Image (cartoon, rainbow, N blue to C red; front, side, top):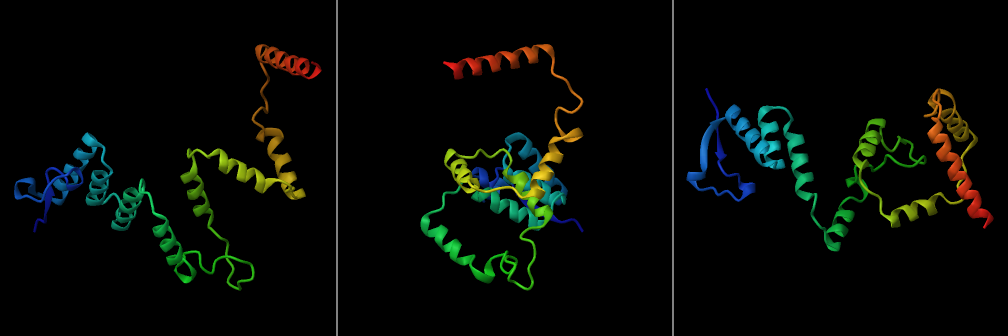
Length: 190
């Protein structure tokens, strides 16, 4: 038995209507292909999700999660909404509830290595404001590295881990470096 889907010729996210003249019957495979073509032509995330979900490239939960993320991406939340969300995530409703603090007998690390990597990748390329940089600088003021950390840093900067290991500066680079030092020295003397 063949399963048919109703497909909007002009998708609803592109202001298409539910009028019968805008709807056609397609098999699941045809429906996925129709959304792939729409995505390639117009680049709308909704068509990409529909194509990948219908073709089985991604699961239903991932489609829902991505749909929520994309639809909230440029949303500006009111103070009231932010406060309600904050209150809703307090206590046991928070996904991290009970996973923090060494006093907890069931203490676990805050995040798994995979979570940390995913969070790190997600932040790459996002510019940091001057205000945020200043706050980070204040947080680091007066902090000292442990001897173990210093040892790791020395190891990373020496030998094969150093970016210049086994390389030599060209003569033109050396000349530029000498000129820069001369300019710095001249500026200090005057």
